[in-house]
Length: 322
Image (cartoon, rainbow, N blue to C red; front, side, top):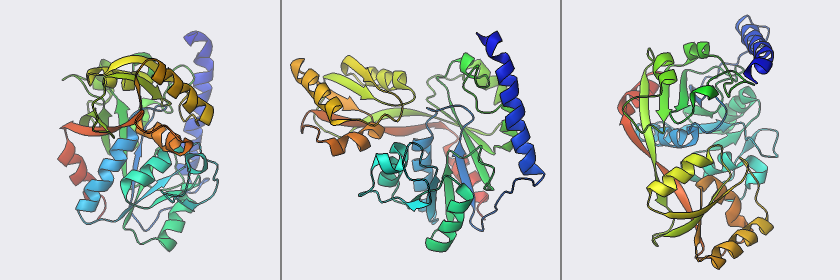
């Protein structure tokens, strides 16, 4: 199959390279905002842990006296123009599940703009902020970034690190030249996978892993896991490592928009086998408006635990903001 897809990967590489060149020579324009811009992105499809890193970075910069704003594309949402997210009134259908989660947890303004340069201009004119954190915009050359953070998932297999459509890479490894710092998430051993050790050897790096905390203080034993995320296997592994008896894992597509019927079916099954239902925080922002039964549901929160490079990342990011 790889051989059959190889010509398409070559075409894809040519197209993304041509696009970058057109920006470099000025055929396509890059807008430079008077506000500093930090990008938290990746070069692979989905599931690298950008959202917890973005939330953590917001809090760190706030503690240093900055007033950040998050700029997001609003992936999966219906809104197609600049929009200031209302964390209490907007829905995931309107703004996207990850964007709504950022708005509810970050305590900073979150703005949707598929065209990031247009969003940056709106932020400059309407919000009292001192910097922009662009969520998942590493390939968006229309807005200049002062500081680029690339996230990598230590749990991804080596075969995923090939260009689309063979693997899951949006760009080739040469894109690392645009990054100022790398964050490797879900690190569980002293040594990174060989593919990351090799390609990231010359990069400034920070490493972290995740732990689950729960929305309920009531102890859980038997649970049905529910997830509509890019990496459900990781969620299941965290559940098992946390000591839960995972009796079933109901997996939906990433960014799945739940229906009332889904909730009822899950609750009937949980009651029949005397289990609770544990979902991810990203799923809960979509489920909680559908009337889930009290006492039956619990949602998880991912806590960042830094292994190395935490202070270096913050200081380096701050140095690019002056």
